[in-house]
Length: 354
Image (cartoon, rainbow, N blue to C red; front, side, top):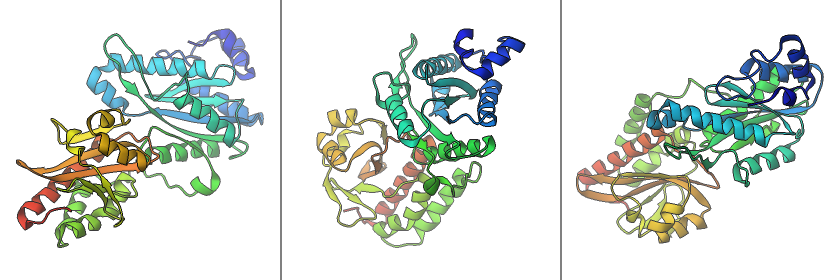
């Protein structure tokens, strides 16, 4: 929890504390700065033309933690992350809670791209990492990741509203890349991003579109190619891999891809779906397949068994190179649904994947 003397180092907080005391200054759950004051602080900095970087950290899959372990554990995770982040930013700036599982960072030390990149790399990968780590609690030890969007004043924006809009865009971009990453605003990359918070298709619409594209094309490979544009948009992927009876990993979009994956079946033992944010389990269970993933610089993946009844026709492999993606339930559902359509077509048409 922030102490009064820590905040009084900053003119905005010193003035507020002098006039109103600490009442309402801190978030009651986490002990970092409350929503109103962290946003007013950022506005004060822009009004007084003080350079700073502004970032939002959104914890990934926080609803899953609440639903799996209970809201008490969810609160403990949020408290731990907020306090770790505040300690990490000590001497650099101030941390506040925007609301729910979102935290705000006002960084007065690092205001250019390279400095922010180094900061976030340490936050994700360093010895004092804030996210992408297991949080040890009495009841359980959930693995926590987060997505960050960041922009700087006055380099990227000359006013508060524009600056906040840039944070929104970069955070949205991080989520569409699969979460568990940080995005720093770069004009040529991010200025034209259109945020579609509500515009994403509902699950029924996506499934219906998959069926329509899949049904009206003959041949399994043609069917897979026909649904790729939809999968690329919905899952934010550049390719989809699969194996058939021969245990060779192939690409839907690149005909020259043929990599060994004969032991992939050992990865999925009691379930039809596997997701992983590291290759530890893959290395232990399927070392041949793991070497293929490493060769292609793949670190996280979602694998779905293509099966119907007792018949197994192969596996779908969804993975992106150099991405530490966190797979969402809706994304897994889309891939599982596609696997069942492939299995059904294989049974009816008697055609198998290579």
